[in-house]
Length: 516
Image (cartoon, rainbow, N blue to C red):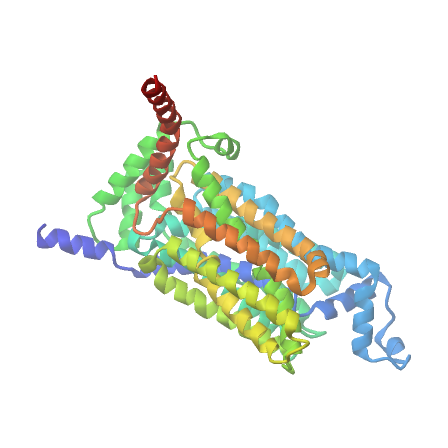
């Protein structure tokens, strides 16, 4: 290999300013998703109070306080009204429902005009949602907030598929894992921002809460200005549209001046494979035996993320910190958000060195042990006060293990498991699986908590153990492999499965001859 070739390879591995801008711009959609996930929780009692007033089921503040009751007691009383409970529950749940519906449209939106224009178009939804929530005091707050949350959920269902798809297609092979993990980093950063500015002395108060909710759409405005500066996915240009020169130009913008022949050759082979079969729709992907193993792996990775118990941690954390003697549990909960962000950064640093499979196994196994420790701590904290600190430590470690692997990796590994043809449909199905699982956990967890009490995390420990065993046995390592090489791993396994019945028949015939 001559010096010029070596220099070309080195240049192709550099992270250019254009690539950094493109990834940052795309990740703004993920930041908005995380902010929308976390923002609704902090001002719950204040929002319920405004719902009660709008519905006419709670008296004015002056009348309420004349009954020698505290304002906090009236906050609690407003939240117990059946009409308020219904509208509040709908405000929370409608977000996941919107995401479930729109996740099926990810492939259509991404293929219609491209990844960049797709993200740009859906920003209209985020801005509309932000305006509905930010201006909710101008009409009926419960109707405006629910409408805004529904539209925002619809937007987030689209962006949670488009962002990993775009980043996965533009990232150099050597950095694909680290850049893919930035989707999850942006989500947890958005959650942390919503927790901090949702404090009562900032925006989480009676006057400013509409602005707190309305800021959900702010990242979309910034992203709309930056997206026109970002190059389109070269894989989309070459494989989907057949525009080789445009793909070459996009590669030069993303990677600098280098010889893109090897990248274009890989895309050419992938395009030829895609042309051998009909267009892969969601229904045909579900029916196809060719991609069944990849699809099952993708869905199981997303199920392991949502059914790990991570959402239950955020339900339980405030009460655990309260029992441990923390005077302001909300700050300890923000501490959990900080841990979330720090260990996602650890994952960014490790994922391309250690590998996707290894980090996921380490994360799920560690979470399983922490879930057991939490159950023991919750069960014994009334008898031994120091056990509360065991529970607190287990919470921080649980979140740490989650963000090392099971949190970020499912989002981008789907784009690695599938070639260009079935990729949009696979991402749509995986996204729907994630949103549906999130919705199921959110709806059923209070009932599971009432049923199992302090033993609730034993259930999650069992699920985590099952996911760990499955991933150990069935999920291959994708680190450093091209899309073509990853597909070959699954094809090899499929051929082995197809050969095994014939091999078994031949062995039976040989045995019968030997016995005779």
